[in-house]
Length: 600
Image (tube, rainbow, N blue to C red; front, side):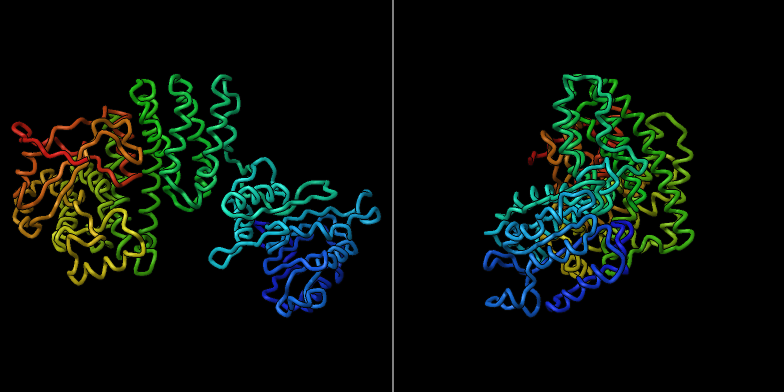
């Protein structure tokens, strides 16, 4: 009934919740016979159904199981009404037990005087369970109805070539989805179908965006095309969920798998990556999140990291990172303008902001830091990026300084990106303020910041325990060991704050610190990075000062300069369970480093 979903007349449409049989018949009479003939009729029934005496009945509030013929709505009666009203097209959806038994009643409408002649009505039926099956519910919702709504809303992709969807093609998708997870077999019937489909609008019809299927248009290598086409199917779901249910992990994994099909041909790989990036970036424009396009482009670059040893792919990554930095700068401008118009624009409301707002602020600063690193790495003028970073920090500091706190271990990569960027462009005062806020708050909670993967249901419990000073190292909500506090300690050298930090280390006594250091960065965007090393330190046991920490900091490789290095930084911004330690300067006391026990 919503205009963006269907073209149905709202005045003649209605919703009946647990009605009586009389209310159902009155509503059908009004819709079918009170005004001019209908062009399209859609009826959806979700409730109890049963077969009796060779007919299917839909139960109403006053139906009685032992008297269905007298107290429930026979499907045969509904067919007779439809035949008499003769809408051009009827769509009937039934989510009820034994609904597949509707075949028993088709003889009512399968008559030459009703169907078969030119202009006679078409009928499409979708029943979510076979005649001997029950219709399953999960959380009070029928799984068949949920699957149908996912198709209507666009969460399940059907096709992107026609502006409307037909119930037959939706029915096939519903049947495939439902039968895969439950012992329930939806049934689809289409009778006397002609003319264009009109069940609902197609949310994936082309609206100026490049459809994903265009990736293969004109693909030059016919040898790889079949394998790519097979792999491309795995990208449909991440592609269609980009605007509303973005999942960077699934997206990167699927794109990397697809690029692996052409790994032996760098030119074809770059071509494929560019096509995917353009199609998916266009899809991101439908999102309300101004950073969605940034994250999609970044994800495509991260997916290329495993192949970046080739100079041509590394050069392509440089080009992509240049474009990403421009997109980030535009997004930062939007954020700054929003705060100018309304200083609390970054507040979503509710207690959740006590936890998520600090993470959101450092994430913004981390992305702004990326633009600085990108311009410097590619030898472009960094003045523009530095100005935007400074302005963003000024706006945040003025209104949200009390929320610049160390809250979650997931802030580690954002803080490293922001602090090193501030230091590299001489914004030392801003860097000292940010680092001071973060370190002071970490000391106040004894370094017991939340786990990066804390369950959302435990966030409130963490906040209460932290406020009451009841966080203990053994608490499952606490990051043990922590990368964030280690990042803050390592960053102190950037702004000559090591003496001040040393004086506060007694309040972090016995705190475990950790740095995950990969052997190389080709898989830095993978969910599990192979061949890495956990360097673990304990305050008051292994180290007593920042200098001690630097003196035992292990040697480890850094990603190659340029595109691979920036793509590795993007990986940490997309997946904050890994930190870009390579952005921090190598400790001056690197000579004489002793070995750190490896913990894999």
